Image (cartoon, rainbow, N blue to C red; front, top):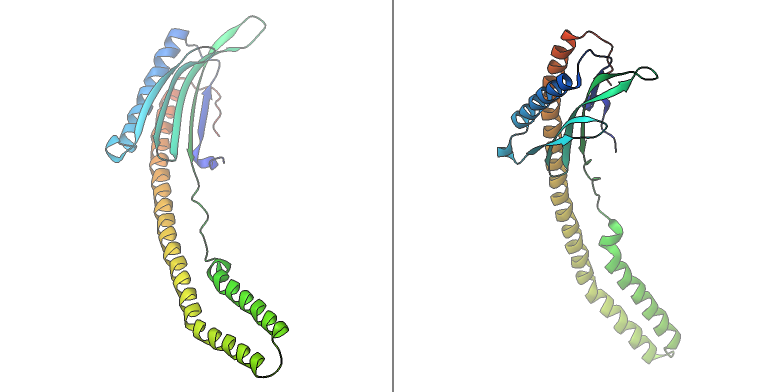
Length: 222
């Protein structure tokens, strides 16, 4: 599940005049700023974990990751050689900030069939017993006695059935209340993660503006 567009930031600066060594210095400076921003807005004292990983290969750079529970986010600062002709390449810079967090689970509802199932089974069973007695019972006093006995048994079972329905409904309601409480807690936690992440993006955009002041070239942000 992708994150909303306003929770993702990407910018790039192409065809720069930087040497690879200068670009590497700038990338690490931006990565250090990203790591400082992560530790500020996602402090370890509140259970967040921040780490930095060096990137090597076609793309050089640093990926800063922060996580807690189902929440994870990354700020990746990179430099690479971009072809501009048949045999010419220039250094380009790019920074990508993205977040992932699991959506809250669907809010449950009371399953009336689960509540009424025992009572329904009892009613169906009783109906089958009644049909069997009606079929097998002889006419006269003996048959009347058996039917009366069955009806007395059903009358005596009525309070038990009512209690069973009430107990199961109460269990369902208690479980639903606990689940809704956990649901609201998770929604609040997701909102807190998102608020912290937006503040971090704002800080990273300030860093972007500082870099672009020194090299006013086209860049992309989405």
